[in-house]
Every structure is written in structure tokens, then in C-alpha cells.
Length: 138
Length: 210
Image (cartoon, rainbow over all chains, first blue to last red; front, side, top):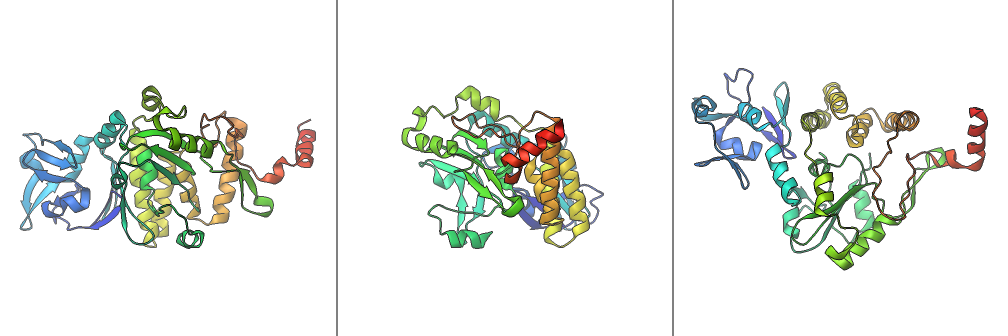
């Protein structure tokens, strides 16, 4: 199964009895979606969202000798849009993350690969003025 | 695209963003677009149609004239004067312009990524289906329109751009780019082939309208 998220393509395991929902193995959750489970809830960077107490047992389950997280249910709760075609799931932006950026006007961070192969994170340029300019060849 | 970077030997940092991740993050729907970010990482201005200078694109009958000096002039002013620049947006302007996106736009983003994935793995039929769905969800996003049309070839895409701009020019009050609101900007509403603006062609069009 493939998950497209945050500009990356992630090959992940598929729960055999997934029944139409997107179940992600807990150890693959951070790479595949950006979220990781912590004692305070599901966290994406500085944003942590407690899981509803009545959903914990429903969304976190043992199957195929692993612990799985029902990501599609969680995404529905967060208002994150996703679309599926066969074994490929594509995740849209997380509204809560975007709204944090809108309130503070802090530029959303991203990570891309430069022509020379180096990784560029926007946040690495803090302390300098940045003009970010996009173009396309179409 | 990479070979152009290499031949130009730019002094600034260049990245290729094949999934339009950056445009999505900043809510841009066309190119060129640009944002100014201050030393603390805050957005202080973001626009589309940010050509760095007047220029021509294409050749022959497809040659178009675009751009002006307005954005480059304003950018130099901001770099020199920082927050004192008159071109820096106020907090109320930022709040007005950096609005949250709606459900359809967020679903379009996910669908677009799906289309790019199937295009990359050579599944043209599914790619086209998802490009089309993306365009229906976000019909004003030129990035999605042009990238989707390009899946059918650059000639097809160019003809679709011409047809759509012609339709919008005749039937709506919109512009290809949102005006930047900078002094001296070129406010031509749509990019059209340069030959359409020659005096002879304009005269013929006037005669045909009679």
C-alpha cells in the first residue's frame, strides 16, 4: 500500500482486514503521515491532539502481530481530506496546521531537495530575509 | 527543468518541487508567484504575477509579452528598508489575504498528488481521471489546470490555456493574475499572443466587431 503525504511517497504495510479504512502500522505512522503517537496524543510537530477517550480502543488495534492506528477516522476528526484509488491513498493538508500558520503569519515550513542534492528547510533560513519565488516550465 | 538551472548558474538557491508542495502551502494558484519572509520567519507579502522584469515568452505566433519592473522595484525597497517599506502588508491586509482554504481546495490538493503519482508510474488513464477531478474541485487554480492539461501534451495544454483565457476575458471580470497592488504594474487582464496587440490586428478586430 502507498501513502502520499507531505510531498513524499511512502510504501507501507496493509492490514489484511482493513475493511475500507486506512489503517497504518504504528511504527510506520511518523514516516507515512508525519504524525506520531505520544502520551499527550497524536502529535505533528508542535501540534498535539488528544485522542477522544471513547475512540482509543476503536482506533488503536492489534492485528497481524502489529499495533495499528485507524488513520482515516482520525483524519475525519481533524478535517483532513484524503482520496484513495486502489492501494494508493493521498492525504491533503491538515487544516489545524495551516490555521496555526495563518494566525501567526509564520511561513509554513517545508523541506525540499536542492539541485546539488542538499536538503533545504525553509526554517534553516531564519535570521535572514527570504524571497521565495516559484516558476514552472509546464 | 534542472538543466536550465545548471546552464543559468544562478547565485541564489534553486529547488525543484514536483508536487507543487510550496504553492499549496502558500495558497498560490499560478506562476510566477512570490512571498517575502522576514528575519523572524513571518510572511510580510505574497503575490502572484510577480515577473521580475518585462519579458517575452514563446516564439513566433505564440510569443507573449508579460511582466514589468514593479515587483523587482518593490522587492529591492523591502530588502533595504525592511518593515519600513511601504510595500509590507499590514496585519489586517495579511489576515484578509491569508485566508483558510475550503474543503474542496484541500480535497483538490490530495487528488492532484494522486494524479501526479499515477502519471509518474505511467498509469495515464488514472492520472488523467484524477487531474480532471482536481480541476473540477479547484477550477480557478491555474497550476492544476496547466499541469493536468500538460499530461495530454504541451500543444494541447497551450490551446486549452488560450481557449480558457479567451472565454474568461469575454465572459468574466477576472484577470489571469490578481493585481499585485504595486505602483507601475502592468494591468493587462490576460496574457495573449503578442501579435494580437499589433495595430493591424487590433484594427481588423475593431472592423469585425462592427
